[in-house]
Length: 517
Picture 1 (cartoon, rainbow, N blue to C red):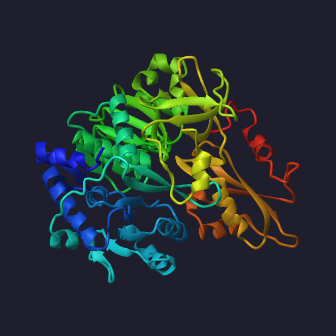
Picture 2: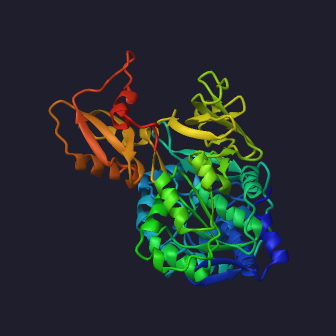
Picture 3: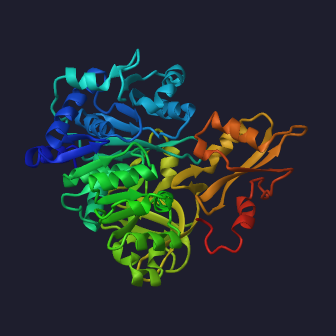
């Protein structure tokens, strides 16, 4: 239950095996381990003490993986910053958990000045890009070259490993705390369900700041196999990389899968090395799954359902994606409880409901978070009597398969990204012309759901839809901004004056079997 143990094992047993491949740059485990030990020393020399938070604001790279291991090797706590956030959101997360060091790459350099200017404590920047370090920043490669290696701090078990920020129900992100035990347990649970491919090469195209992508990377370290990394999802680069590097396993969200199979180069590339395709973050459309399976004959398809607060909750194995499983509708479920995790469907009083009845998914197990950083009230609300309340509405069939049909919490899943309505409403509500607003998710063929805002303006005010979006872009990430805006003169309200969102949602979801996509 020490996340760095996998590096020691690889260094001892297979130092010559390739650890990372990033756009032609290849590093073996012997070199990888040496760089991690030196970078850990550099982080400590830059001020990282035990349990101090270190942020990473960067696209995927081999250096991103080195940084994760180096932070843990040196005894620190990782803060993987959401790469789609605006400067105010980034600064909030850095301030909230007092992050003193921030590693940043070329893509996010334009944000550095704004971060330094507005953060309560301007972080010490380490430049991890491909060019010379800008003035005022330390060079990642120079630090590794100039710093002596340090011994592993051997942090593990209940020691904090990550503070990973997710959307907030009150309009502010929440820092999910995960210990070494939490992450290690979730990875081992996944290994138990789907053993690693021997001498496999796993492609990291989904962003590593996500728990799903980062945990897949940790799994690959535990297995001692090879990481193939690209900066971000690009359908053509995915196809080219699979062909060139003979990738054996790919993890994507459904929107990425659709973009991949729709790309004109798809049929011209040799993808025969792929043995496993893992998808998650949002459900997959049945027609897309059918088409993808036909295009990848003989490839294992599997799905997992999890949260930032709990890495793995359920798994849906390859057999449920075969012809018999699809005929039974099992490919449309999120599977059954993973090994070592208990899952129930409960009512508002926390009592388990009969099979086939919709309630809330609650879970307990070794990968469940200890809570939210500096948010005791939200922690107490989510963790009750030892069970994590997910806010996802679902039913369980007689065989234990879980089918998600609604959300108890006010969240939208668009293209695999979670968007909390309260965050968007908070941003819209800061416009001086807005009297009242509500944000809901509406169906979308391309994204599953899109963000829709319903706005009541103050008397005498006049705004256009694009003005609302422009205002939001200054405060929140672009993917959270409403794709559509509807102006009304009033809202449906309850007797207590609360906006009735179910009434707002109903026309958009009329005639659909589920209230989520």
